[in-house]
Image 1 (cartoon, helix red, strand yellow):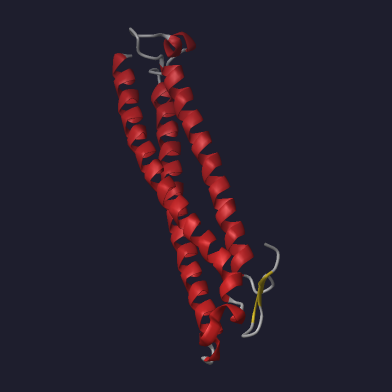
Image 2: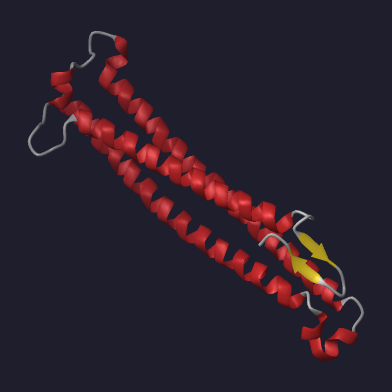
Length: 179
């Protein structure tokens, strides 16, 4: 029994490392989202040739600046998708740890399978195995839900900003519809 508790402690140490990774990814995604939002906010201003003063006499300047901003936005959105894949990797790792943890308490289905009393048994101040398993399940569900939410937001942002029906661009007029 004590050996199983030690195995769970190892899992939770690994989960702690995953939580640190999650926080770094969170900071990166917030920065990327902020950069994408700044570009989206600028698009209407830079699409108006009245904002160029003497530069508006340069042929194609508005289209060139808008195009460059859209390229930057697309690059940021690709980076956001890569960051989301890293979030997904963390979720999958936590899911695997939960599945492996369940397998540990089942003992592979053999005679080593623990009963409910053994799962609830505490050794000193350490949590019982059932609490450890429940904790892994909660961590997995929580991070999976957060990943799905982040993924939905990034997908919606991509759909709204890069689809032609929302983006109408010409040298004289630039509007973002639907935002």
